[in-house]
Image (cartoon, rainbow, N blue to C red; front, side):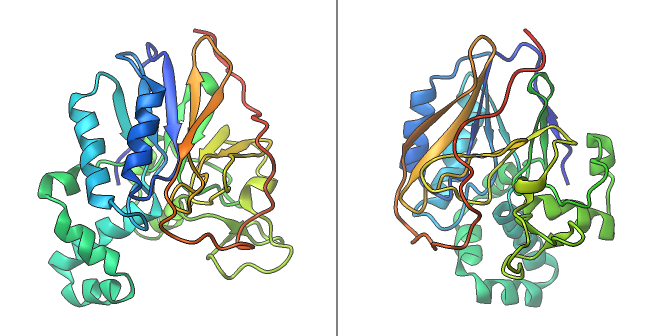
Length: 283
């Protein structure tokens, strides 16, 4: 597991893009709209692959930006990147396990075959989380389990193994929590009354910017968290949260592509898109 990335103090504008899911053309349009410069940072909140029409091309486009664009690129790992990384590792070391994974998700075999070794290495450079100190922001893909009492430093996270590592990586998949204990619930096991994690999160680790859970058409703005997956692959929008040194934070969006139908009733009540985030350190 890679450690987190810390932003340079000279970074002027930080744009955090929600789940792309292989929607290449909307991503290209959004990057053009953002007009980032040499001192800026572009962060992907994870799940840049799967579901959409051009996952491999999306990886190569982001890799090209990483290699040629004047601004810096960072990828926070999503559950889909994690799944592909595990599949490729198992294909080499545990072929039967890999075959079982591919039997339930054809996207694993298809994308693995379409990516070059360099593409896969780039995708594997994703970090599990990223901090933006001047905004007191923590970027993760999924969310924060309610029973998590401490968040590791980058050195501590890089050293996690076994069950401790698996437990920590629930931040890639967290949606709902047990109303009794605050513990992580696997998707689909939640019961009526079990809260979406951001509904009860108290800001203990900073303001969390996350993806994973689509909020159709408009970001989900909670008291201490902001969801930037606005359902691009479901035909809604692809959104970036833009944090600029001399401006109030804002959202920029472009139309998405309807590649997968959106499942109504499988998410939390939309909290509204009134952004509750302020800069904590002045430039």
